[in-house]
Amino acid sequence: MPTREFPSKQGGIQHFPHELCRSWTDDLPVCRMSGVGLSTNQIYRVDGQRLEEHECEDRSFHFRLNEDTYFYGVFDGHEGQRAAHFAAQHMPAEVLLGQLAGPSTDQVVKNILHQAFDAVERGFFDSIGDLLAEKANLQMELPDGFSNYELYQKCPEIVDRLKEVNAEISGGTTAVVALIYNDRLYVANVGDSRALLCQNENGELRVIQLSVDHDLKNEDELLRLSLLGLNIDKIRSSSKLGNQLNTRCLGNYTIKSEYKDFGPLSGATTEPVIAEPEVHGGLPIAESFSFLLLMSDGLYKTLEEAVATEHANQDIAKMVAEQFCEQSTITGVAQAVVDKIVRLHHDRYMSDASDTCQKRGDMTLLVRQFNYSFQKAQHLSPTHVGGGVENTRYVIPANDPHFYGTNSSSPIQTPDLRPSTPAQTPSSQTTSTSDSLRTFPSRDSNKLQLDADGKIQPYVDFGDFYAAVKEAGNQTLLMGLNGNSK
Image (cartoon, rainbow, N blue to C red; front, side, top):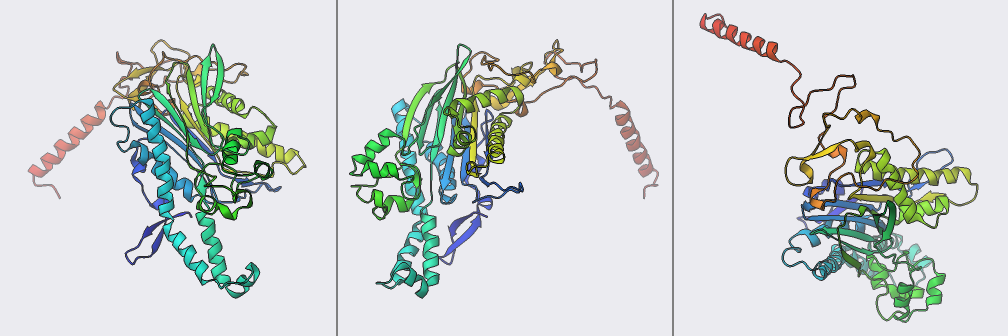
């Protein structure tokens, strides 16, 4: 079980399970217009038994601070889950603890996001200070003038512990976050986790990638590395930068502070792998916004490997649109898309005798709904009973005989992108039907009677029950007066 470290009263380090350690973010209200789908990594076996290669390294959050502020994030860790967990716990604190108070121009908000990434990076390195000190002490205990093989023969325990420490300080994570503040959308990212905005343009789904993939296919990143004095041909021929695939990340002390030890990076004049995010925004929240997707690279890379697509973004957006016709909750939409990609990848493994699709990584998909309706809820009308999204109620109109007649089994040619209600700001969006209060008609020909407010009238007569209670009470009182009570 993954652990978190806290100083003990004796000065040492105590390890506690992550699940037992609460954070202030645990009490932030979850955004009900968003949902997360997740599938952990898997190595395939012919017998069908599930085998994970490592613990799940993906983390995410989806918060609604107030009616003007929403914050979402997906983090894809490598070399362990420690960095991703740290970032998911601390990023909200660096953005939502009063930093957005006061004047809020686009540049101010973008600066806050830049500072948040920097603060999380520094905070993570501070959190592994004990490991860095232990590494220095272990290295001092090793005798000089011996090969690695000879060192292991002489000091096996020290060498093994040094490997464990190096593995922990090598952990890092990608990060993609989306902030909706005062009806404007901002996106920031490092690494190759993605943010996709899906819009309705004249009935067609338009997909826009708002994030930047910081990898070795990015020509701008290769140019940045070349300006640091690195040989780009050698960089291109390497499948990784040290122990990772990305040119930017949070954490990973080894690749950042010890890059001189990695051949292709040794000639850099300064740290080649950085934590500076690309920040975009703010985009005014528009009626054309259908939904926003945040995803780890495991999702789209698994799809690319499974079906050899060159349009993974569009394919995933189409899957999401289709699931809005099949599901009735936003979490159901996200999980159904993840599950479908899992099945496609496993089917490729089962049908292909080659070495492709032998395993897959962790997969996370976060879906944030804007003006895109659930087909299964198309006959529900929103009735606001107070401020905010959480106070939206759905009731069946008294003259609607078709609630059970929704047909979602017909083939989907072009998803219907028309919003079911007029354009609304994030503070007044309707939620999925699972997050709302529904009243249902009976399944026979007779409907439950609704009052003027659209609520179900009482239909069970408790008169006999109350009369029996009253009579029993009177009898008990008479027994007490007559001295017959026990």
